[in-house]
Image 1: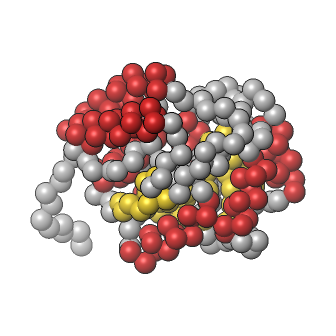
Image 2: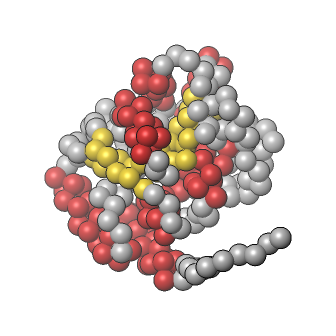
Length: 260
């Protein structure tokens, strides 16, 4: 499969890019009208992860209307660690994350926002925490969130409601900075709007998810694509779906298996 020339829509990726051991960490970043931030994102990734070629940055262009797709191609031409996935139309954040996860080649897969409000400098410590702690995922919570009071207050309320309904305790479901082991996150079936609930869904399937404080910065370029109003109703519907999944997950009380 050629990631630069394909007519497949998101969720029609039928095979994973192989993990051949040459890439230890894939960092997936959904991109929607972020042309000003992309060169800076790559520079911060190099600063955080070093100049060696054992990591990759998977940029998934979600039908951007600006020059983001062109910038991704230019960055790829200069640095082979930059990979590009290009949607034919805007499909949303979950679709972009899912596509990036499916084509990632790394032993570990991280997600990050392309707007640089997440700090790539947190990634090395998160990777170490995952490996040394034996976790399946390490997810960040924004310790000093650099957003407006209204956005921070609404996020706190939303987190409480989500955790109450989903019967989970994730501190910051809206933080995009996460690191996963490859097998669990690639095997997890995703549906529209489910990117906020990846840690919860992993826990539903019995995986070990740890949390850690991470940095957060104000946006310095581009425009935020998500407001309080345009997220509330969709998030509520998504939460109902997550609760439905929890109540119907299969629990198999197997005590013994005889094979040969």
